[in-house]
Length: 333
Image (cartoon, rainbow, N blue to C red; front, top):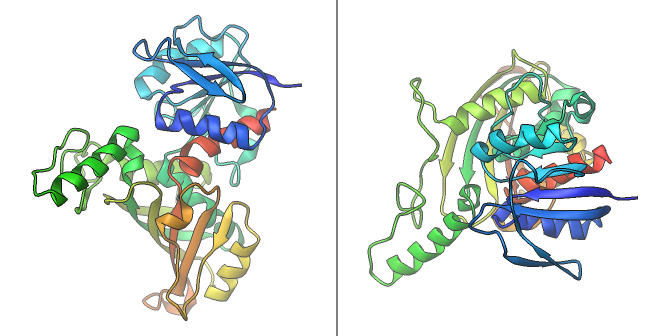
């Protein structure tokens, strides 16, 4: 028996990924509503042998909906998420609208699936960089508590949506043709360039993406005292984020122990070949469900073998967004 499902923001990059994953995982549904803004209303989308008409999302869109997958942006989530929950749907929201609300579970299914049952109609999907980091760090933290976590992200254009991916492609063509790059989505040239993450800068000098990773990880791990610091950067990669993660543990731990723990961890694959210097790349993670981990080594600057360096890659649109939400929906079923 399937559920009555709705997808809010179905025409966006994550919305389209929702459809691909729902089909690939054969998610059971009886009915499906495809919702978007008035600009996309009336558009036809073929899915699983049937043609659907995109409807404009309103507060009345969620009657008889069991689960609503939201990826329509924070303002739309704040406007329509509570209405959907009031109508009886469970909202799995991909925006930042509800993540730090103490009454809303913030869930990575490989980490804290037990939090799902505490929902009051809305469950929040974490930030993409947070999810990708948490999947491999959690099994290590469970085995040997992490005291301090230093993260540097290398974030693909996909994190800013389909239009940002097209901007990277178009700018590359323009620059190679000797033209000035057109900057519409990003504040700076993304092609052949690297810059501080384009989220708002706060008074303490950290951008919003960096602050999200700190606060969300503490909430998901239920560990408010863990020391975390982040540097989040945009790079000219189409899809899949990479992260350099330095972990200081309570007790000694070796790279061999880390590989052993991660080899059986859900949602993790290891690419760690020192002989050929082969470690995770964005092209390894693109279109894949797992987070890829490699370049695992002892941080020799910390005494007593209590620190480890990791390099990871994960598909921002997939595990960093759509897949994580669908895994939550599967557990709701």
